Image (tube, rainbow, N blue to C red; front, side):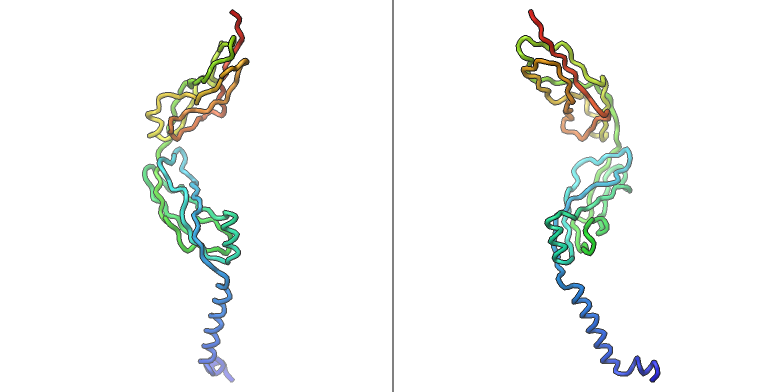
Length: 218
């Protein structure tokens, strides 16, 4: 029997067998699979150097996942899925960044079938710096007989960094209220800064407000 006879004899039975084998493979591989939709956190990464994100960016996206029931059950309890928004190619101004299934971190064997929104708008602005003298804001008064005899900020000048639109109109730098009510000794405080609701940061690693309090007899 030659090869031609082997291939073509009873071809309809062989074709049916092939169809049944493929159908069985699909049934076995898909058995136990299901889909779920999750709201997953979106993480911004690779912001270009000397640029800052301004305005609101969605913090969550909806993702539909396909996988084995057990894997998806583990996902819903363990929060193992998150999205990454890569800003490495973004420019100054408003950008529309597309999210693909490759940007969704998830366990192996779980497929992403749908993402919404699939496009996220992100606005970038250049960073700038300004130098200020920090003004300490004190709340309360020392204990009776005790007085403030010295008030100093270290370092004397503070560098603030932030987006141009936020920092340009920013004209003063002061602390949040520092409680000295009924204090009887000097204090060295790592203050919280009042940024007036702006997205700014201090460049210096450490800032200290030194409040000298002494007892003075009259």
